[in-house]
Length: 215
Image (cartoon, rainbow, N blue to C red; front, top):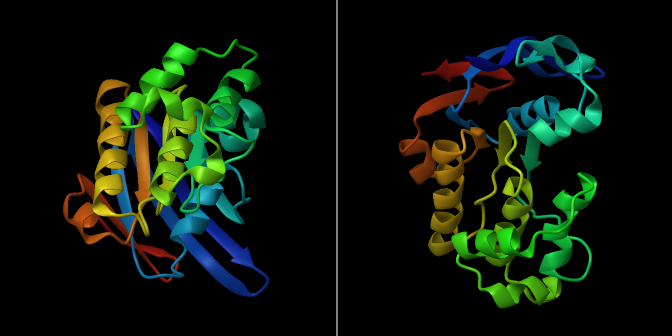
């Protein structure tokens, strides 16, 4: 079943065309890797899908329904967007993992949170760890868990492994693959990492705002 469909998506700022005629069908539980030169429009495309930018032209359908017809809050629970520089808040790891429960008006489940930490090789004691004491890789692991405690239908990854060492890349990749295979989370991942590109199940290339290659 098609989860996401982009029909002739275009995006323009003043006289500058950033994206044009982007057409893409994404099935449920797909894992699509998006690559291309810097400045080609990859991150812009993810932000449009996430609802953070408004396309200039075309249609964006999630589960057959036009993006504009969704309640924005409900849409963002189904389409989650993770960025290269993890945005943590509050004082501790627990503050960040508590947030997905709070916005759903649910009580914080510490067992669920600590089980999630274990899946990304972080000990239970990290719940109370100040976020300022985390390494870059640990911060990204916590940020990804915040997106995955309540699995979305679609997870957008915008170069989340850039600047991380191989150990952190592998830990993140394993958890994301697990969510894709076991929980049915559909993934769109922008990357410049050659290992991720070479291992892609389905590769899409964007060059100068156009989708050049899809397979």
